[in-house]
Image (cartoon, rainbow, N blue to C red; front, side, top):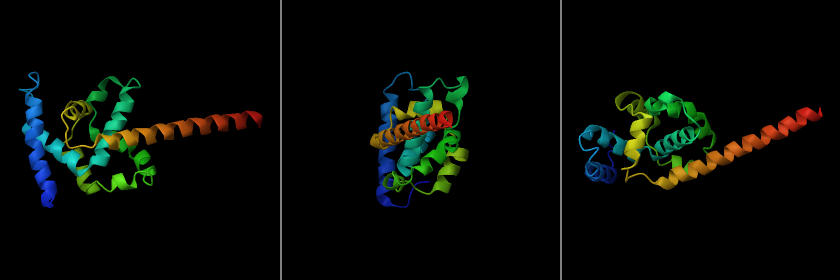
Length: 165
């Protein structure tokens, strides 16, 4: 999953020890850290920043609306699958951001098979993620909120039309 591009490779290799150092400074995490998982998270953020940001935005939105009890144990891949249609419907607005992502088939295999991170793990690792541009998630959050408002407005207009008929 590490790219052949030497600059990207160096970025990943240099980010892993920084992330590990940040995590080990938290005494409660010191014994729970799996370096392989941390390395995988760094690769995920580096190779697929758009898709990861989308997943993180969707989990944040879901957690704000009383998620099911077991939501923290849901794999991030399932979150992506449940919300990818919405992401792809915004491809014109996110075209430049989506161009940052690597191979989508590798992404699927990475997140669904090799490193099936859960919502809980994602939230934990996010606190120490230094190689993800958080403005991407902010932009996605704005677009998602506008899309939801547009749907609500359209539904209200449709309801008014139905009542007058």
